[in-house]
Image (cartoon, rainbow, N blue to C red; front, side):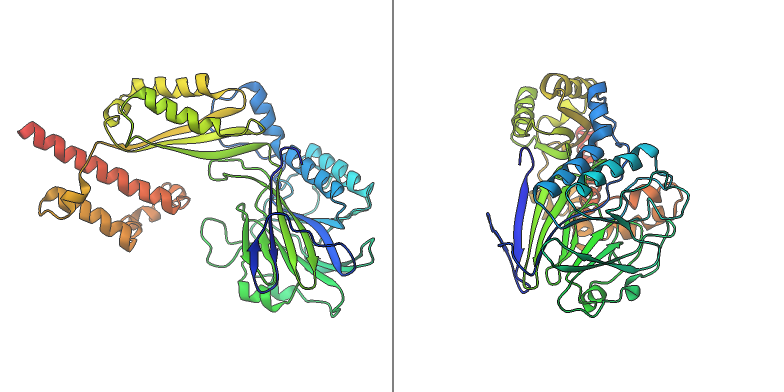
Length: 440
């Protein structure tokens, strides 16, 4: 398997159990396939890292290399077919290079008698006029209405695949009612859908669905796309997001790749295969037990050494906590030198720092102040209330009406809102303490 990592679990329709190596004997009434989504070929990295030319080249190629590795996995595992659940290309106007690349990968599958089934999503809707390359005969692209395609595997199993491609980028209708299961109890029924669950935040509400509506269709497997985070929404039937195949910004951390699926009429085995050559990772260092810059660098070095050189890494570094290093890190010159030292001396050709965020505070006795009747205690208690009751968004609700600001705060997750509260509290407490010292 080389540098790829696999994560296995078996769903027995009524339960899920983690396992080491579990093999389902291949025989009658079983199919094997690869489920991937959100290739976004042609997408650029969103990073402020000052990367070398060699690293930039690897970053540009990373989505292509990841898909190439997925195709190789499909061939080596002798799968029955491969599905791509939307957003093959990053833009509506698909580049010749990206289309040619997909064709060459599909030809590899054709040489091993493996079909490739594709739906297009919001980034690459099937609007016509953008297909500049003819795909080989083993490629089936679903049209803009929900249709089904029958397949007979080399082992004699009948598979019926269902899906549709977006007719335009902003497709906000519920497509699920149009999925009609063919009456064939012996066949495997696999549905492809690029969309998201109703009410899910952080993504545009394209092709919204409810879990109950997917369950009611009684398909054997829902191969989803659009959400870039790997998720198992439901065990029975399996309703699965494989995530995107290559992270391209700081919120797309962790391993990226595809699912290898082994499916019978009674159970399913999902094995996640990491194929992305570039990994984004969050590294956090607390200054609470540190006393010198040397110790800070040593802690950073220990964490970086645990990162496998088999990957290229883009790191988001957060320095947080309370301690005596807070004042030193408030010095911009010290901070700039520290950043460059970490990047140049401890980094290297396989690791780059996207950004370094400082969320430190001086040593504050919050626990003691919380129970005391003074202004410092009021500030601490107010922070507790904002965190406990989720009041912060209500307090800052006018900002959501601001045309320029709302774009950025809508993208903030719960952890980032907590950092806002923590930073605000730290600045207020520090200012009050400084005022007290000046008056003293």
